[in-house]
Length: 331
Ligand SMILES: Nc1ncnc2c1ncn2[C@@H]1O[C@H](COP(=O)(O)OP(=O)(O)OP(=O)(O)O)[C@@H](O)[C@H]1O
Image 1 (cartoon, rainbow, N blue to C red):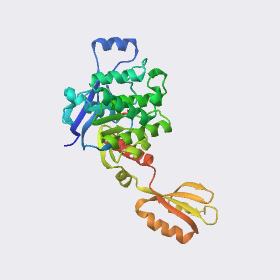
Image 2: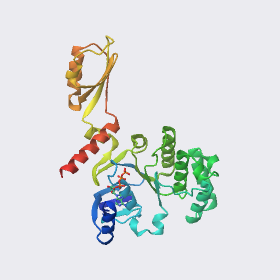
Image 3: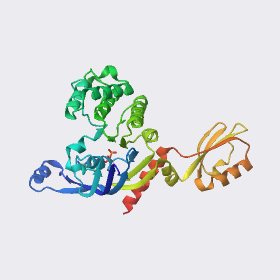
C-alpha cells in the first residue's frame, strides 16, 4: 500500500486585497475585495514505503501548500489524499504519531530552553518509553555530532546546529514518514552535507519514507532518486532524477583539450562555446548531434582529450521551471 496517495489535490487561497491609502483602507472595512490564488491545481502522485522523493519547483509553485495538506495543517479545496492510510486533515491521533514535518523556515523548539527540554516534551507527547527515547536520542545526536549542545539554549545555537536539533526532535518518535520543507535553507555546505548524511544513514537504518523540498540540487542528488516537479501548482514531471536530464536537458557539454596548447579559431561553427581557457574549451552541442559533431571536430583539429557530459542539474531544472512558466503564461 502506498504511504502517500494524492489525487486531484487542489488548494485555492482567498486573499484580501487591501486598497492603497487611508481612504482605501477605510473602504475595505465595509467592502472587502478578494482575489483567488490557485496554489495547487489537480496534483496527483503516489509514494511507496521507503522511497526518498524530491519535490521541486520555483518559488510560489505550491510545494509548501502541498506538504501542508499532506500533513493535515490545511484543508484542500478539492481532491483526495491518503497518507499512511489516513485522511490527513481529519488529524487523527494515530496519524500524527507516524509522521513528522520539518520546516527549515520555522522553529518548533522552545527558543529560550535547551533542546533537551523540548526533546523531553516530545517524549511525553508521544509517550516514548524511556529506554527507547534514550537510545534514539543518543543515536541521533551522535549521527549529527551535537551531543555537547543539547543543554544549551536553542537561541544560542547557530542556524546549522538549530536545524540539526529540529531534525532530532522530528525523528525522536521514529516516524514512518518524514516531510521536509527546505531543511538545509541558509546552511553552509558542511552543515548541508551533515544533514544529508544524517537523513541517508537514518533512512538506511530505519527505512522511513521521505518527501523533501529543496532549492539545493545537492540535497536532491545526495538523497533522492525520484523527483516530482511542480510549477504554478501543476505537476509537470514525475520520474527518476536521471530522466529529468534526458527529457529536458536537450544539450550535452563537450569538453575538448587541444594538442597545440590553444583553442583553435572557428570552433563556434560546431556549437555554442560556453568556455574557452588556454588549451581547453567547452562546447554546447544538441544531444542528437554529439557523435556527428565530434567526428567533424576530430577531422579538423588535433584533440588531446575529449569528454561528453550532461549539463549541470541546476541548469536543467531551471529550464524545466522556465518551460512551466511559459506554458502557464500561454494558457
Ligand atoms: N496562506 C496563504 N494565503 C494566501 N496565499 C498563499 C498562502 N500560502 C501560500 N500562498 C500562495 O500560494 C502560492 C504557492 O505558495 P507555496 O508557499 O505553496 O509555494 P512554494 O512552492 O512552497 O514556494 P517557495 O519555494 O517560495 O517556498 C503562492 O502564490 C503563494 O503566494
